[in-house]
Length: 104
Image (cartoon, rainbow, N blue to C red):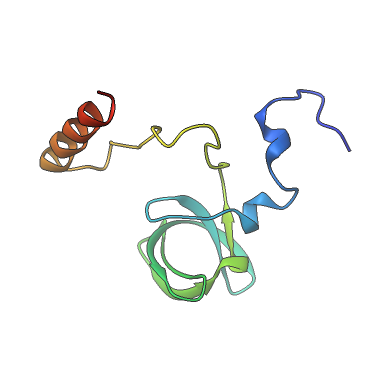
């Protein structure tokens, strides 16, 4: 099948939601007893396992990557697309300083 839009999404594997890397803070859907619920990645564990926190505050530990569905494809173009909304003022200041030095 071909994607009529022809955009950057063509580079994504067909099942990218379950195979692309996920990182702390990513918004996902995670399998909880056979149903998928909105969650956030809280910790990356060895062996492609993850701790997640569900939308209602419940947490689940050691979920296999195959039980986690990524909601948005990772930005394949650049690593500069950083979500700063959850940073503390101190973290934000450090991040901005690092960006300035990186762009010199």
